[in-house]
Length: 447
Length: 165
Image 1 (cartoon, rainbow over the protein chains, first blue to last red):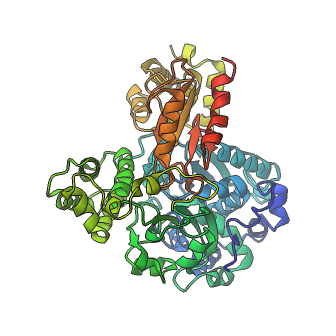
Image 2 (cartoon, chains in turn purple, blue):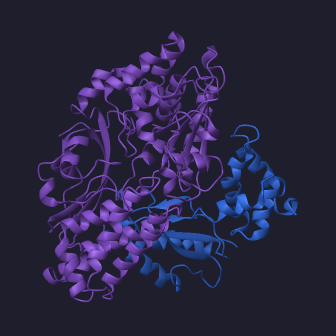
């Protein structure tokens, strides 16, 4: 069995893991202290992060070290670091645990990144509902400031790193990095055109780096234990560990920080396997914005960037959603697309209008009112959104819709030809009640 | 006038957020100012928005834009407590619509409505980042209830109904 919780979830089994004392007892803030004492060369830290293979854990998977190197540290302008703790990708529930159980490690990672890029101010943007997580982060921040570790003149070295915890107000698209900057500026969270990239012109027009919570919380451990140690936990192109959130039709849904490249089958086993009495039908491996995979593609799949891409999807945010054989794919997609229709920021026409049409056609299919050519129409609308929007939200509509149809075409044709009757229902009596029903929690029995 | 709506206590709470941002960037505090005002008055009407604009010295349109964009702002009268059921995919796969139906029956209202006594408003919400605890409910935009069953919902609802006015 793969070893759990070696990086971001290090130490969280302790009841008081979120306290400064508990964090320091396991070596917390030692990387930060060393940097402050030795005035470590910034480029040296960037090289370590590059060598570790750490990539952005929020979904895009971009090399963290490379991202850090884009900010010109000699630029005299005020620079900003932003931590993306907006966690909103459906199927993803990993950062919430870092915020509530290991906030100091995140703060230490933020301090290190801020130091490297020469930012004296950093914002940790949490989604609006993370009120308790916010309180934990505030407590941690205050304790770290009192201990002289953060704030102005850290440990008397003249280094300033002021961190501020921020709360949102309900918006999925805030998770897009430039939308988050707009939101921090007190505006609608509408993604910006790129270029200019945030490293050049970000928050208030100043050089800015935006990293995901899991990415930043990985940094202190990498510096403590070395790039080599981290890289070797994972696979060649995917260094380190990844937190996977396994939800849906499994016996014991949960959040698992495991080495990259773990077999999908092992991860599924950790989550107690597919619900009692049912067979695996499909998997969304990286949050609902990613393409769906049929069960047979996942049999020998490894959970890293490369192998999931080879199967035709992406690791994304690590939100792994499991669906069993009672699930009607048309209904599942309809539920998903209600979300995207609701959350489109409305800025780009293909996404604003397209998300509405996609949801409408799917609702028509489910209620038996769809036109005979509805499947083609749905596919065409979704396909035409891809690549025609400012941000990746367009793909987040297009990829699921087209992959659901490509993989489960017969279910879409069947529901249109049979006035809303689901193909799965024709195969498994009572399928809808099983797939979307509310079952006793003690056994999650859906047989 | 803004001073009637944004009284001293509210003003000092808003100021704490203004101070998190660089000088002159008080616009950044709009989101939290609206939230604090909403926590005080339960839902936002135009005078509330105007008061925030006046207090932060912003054009009214800037505040209207924010208020109409983010989903946590309520623009219609709502109850003392908000009960939001997550209906994103992982929760759907674990019976979220069964949860909605159960609450509709229990509270004798439709989703989106408020109980006659004005205590509870029932709403659907998007992914709460509690997928491993599906089905999940968020109360008052702050308090999570995960793996909910009929029994735990009873326990969750009782204090909301019975607590002193």
